[in-house]
Image (cartoon, rainbow, N blue to C red; front, side):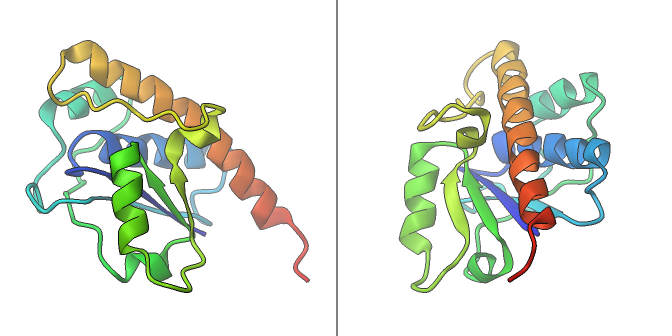
Length: 159
């Protein structure tokens, strides 16, 4: 099973989601069965570390984002990943626009897995520290919901 988190530049929301989801997979005992990555729609930050404010907020919760580097969504991601989860409606539209015919990946907003259908993860980039904490809270809740779905898929009998 493979999960890709997508935001605009891959320095705030999607690397935070990647870090939180990795931790939740460890807690759930599924880290060895699920591959996780993150990317951005744009190429502005390719190769850069997560925003220092995002990294600091994550670190306060015991999540290390220091090894992550921004990358841009690529055509092969649509074949490689089972889930492509966007942080907001603009990102979702961009993912869907780039999606090739025949793609079987689940493409949706990430917060759909937190019971917040059609709600975006707000971009904290231009705000204060509180925005990064809010992102952590939201992606934590969505991570648990996604893990529940993945667990069900992994445990479902094959036909």
